[in-house]
Image: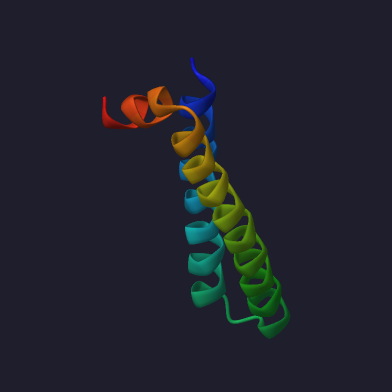
Length: 71
């Protein structure tokens, strides 16, 4: 498994976790829990943005990472 593939998997996992937190926030009636889930989703969004930036740099620096993405 290439580094590019691993980063893409981490990105997909982070997006899944963020979606779960957002769903939990919508489903709970507990206002404290709702706020914590929303905060967690926002923190994960920052991680997602960092991973996306890293993926873009990797693709610029090493074209084979971009090819991995297209396969």
